[in-house]
Image 1 (tube, rainbow, N blue to C red):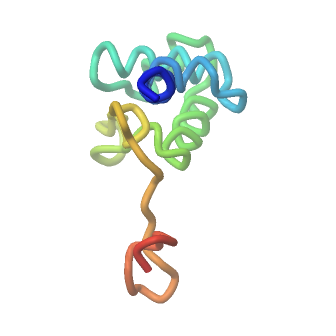
Image 2: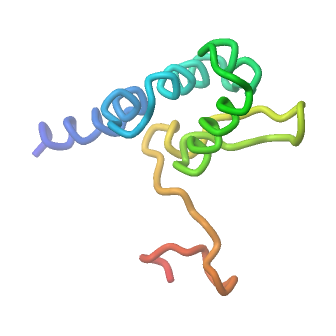
Length: 110
């Protein structure tokens, strides 16, 4: 039982989640590693790091927000992207408000 728990804990490690995720682009994985190391990234630095346009950088970062990997702080040119729920050890699903405004949209909580 302990070995099974250790295997599960290892899979919950954010670095392992990033590496094993088949949906993320290699440049998105690089950005997540950068965020884990430095604590944030901007669309301008993402574009420079990956040799893409800022529009592509914003689209890639938006996908990471929707996936729960990052969260956006600030607005306009001063905005930065910080770790989301999935980058924290033992993170979880992204919570979104339910359509009618009641509850948090979690199937288990109602």
